[in-house]
Length: 277
Image 1 (tube, rainbow, N blue to C red):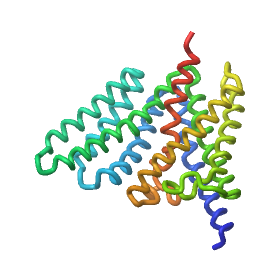
Image 2 (image 1 turned 90 degrees about the vertical axis):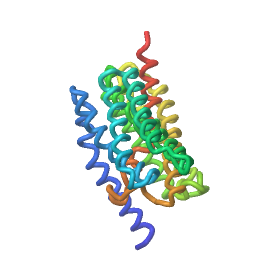
Image 3 (image 1 turned 45 degrees about the vertical axis):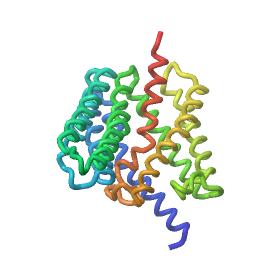
Image 4 (image 1 turned 120 degrees about the vertical axis):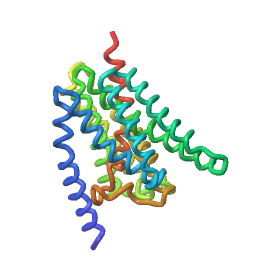
């Protein structure tokens, strides 16, 4: 198979996966009842947590995985029903569950292993549970559904722009030790696509200017790429190409969330700033 054939195959697979995921996501994003979005976030987050857990903490610690998921649900539910205060309380519960587990297994002969595990467990909650729960905080703003669509659209356009521009122009590598396929041309193409998509979003985000949104989109293109590289660094350290193969050639749910996780918090704080009198 030629390079062009592989590229066309990758493109078609990319769009098929996107179309399968986009319909339930959009329906939940715009549903009046925020519980539907919470359930979708819980399902997707559980899959991402499972991939994170298997790769970083192993398959044999089922009890700890259950505690990790309970902590994730507590953080998500707290954000859904009690806002940022509930989000913080849920995260505290999640970390406390892990602390209790590690106090239980701690012994002199394996204390170094325990410290390593508790660090990874805590990172998972800050990175996955805390970051993903911002989806519920954004939802609670006026026009929150539109702002969530903005995050998804800008992130998707950044990813798509980087893929097409980087595949065709190639050129110097962006960070070859972490992600050998990413190029500087892809980064620039992704950022420009994100800025364009964000600027055009002023048509449905009433009360916002296209210049400010374009600047935000440019930042999200950069920041989302950093999130992508952050996850790639884990995969490089673990010696795996994808976190799982549940989505075929697109890897796992953690692979699909990497940039979105990083882009949710800055959009939340931007909208929060806009909402201040």
